[in-house]
Image 1: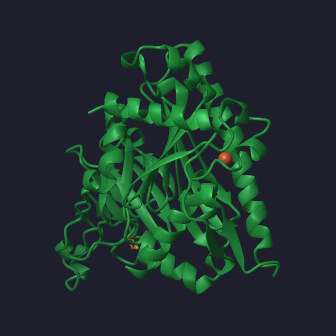
Image 2 (image 1 turned 45 degrees about the horizontal axis):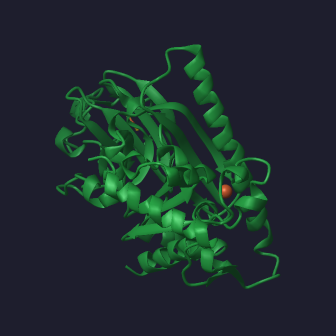
Length: 384
Ligand code: FES
Ligand SMILES: [Fe+2]
């Protein structure tokens, strides 16, 4: 169901009340030791305890629309391969041949009727079963039934492919209860129609900062009037942020100045759509900025303590068919990345000073409490 109208009204009332008093929502201030961003042993624990155990949005579903479509990507040291089966089901595999381990596909998208290893031509069906190999009689010790591609938990939701980057053990189910995991905020996005949304733009880039740093930036609005002075700041109030949480997931409501126009309108006409940005953060590393008629989503993947990789897509209800609508989306994408590039650059700047000895810890103020909660949740997940 769509985000309930009552809930939209409640968010708008909450925003208008804060605007009247010039307030914001606040939580506990916190410190963040710089070792969180630098320590290789801790980085390994984060990969093991966080990335090997939680779903991540890794590509748009629409990129794998047809049987045989595949997409390969390395995630936290694990080579993954998604393949649309003949039956329409999406399969998630470790991108590793069961013969001697070569990668079946290079990173990126392709389409094929079967997966053929480039090394000795072992050939797998789209469901990962071994279909043939040269000189099959030479492998009496490796029956085909033991040489299926290893699976990873995968599911599709909200127009995105979600996977946990870990090999499923023999006999263990690869099912992933993604709706249960995404919870009520996933319900919001489903209500906006995301299941059918398609990517109008995709981007992937290396980021010279720890994977957590981009989320610190994107879970607070303290920086808006300064870092985004020349881009999006004028659309928003100074540091006005409202937050709701479901377990370790966040929903941040950022009212735009235009929301005040609702004061004079009948409540049944109130809609959050044009008057807000809503940030959905799905623990541990997927961010979805809901902008009413479209969304910008990205996942940050850890590479090393000081490096990460960002994979991003802009999702819209349907691909443009006119030059006018293509231009409209192009402008949206440019405006989003204009602001986000400012955040990523500042994150790289921060990472570059953390080993200087200038400080042992960073500070999160009371309005940066969602960034602090993100860190507290990371700490808790390390202890799970
Ligand atoms: S490693 Fe794939 S066929 Fe030999
Ligand atoms: Fe920002």
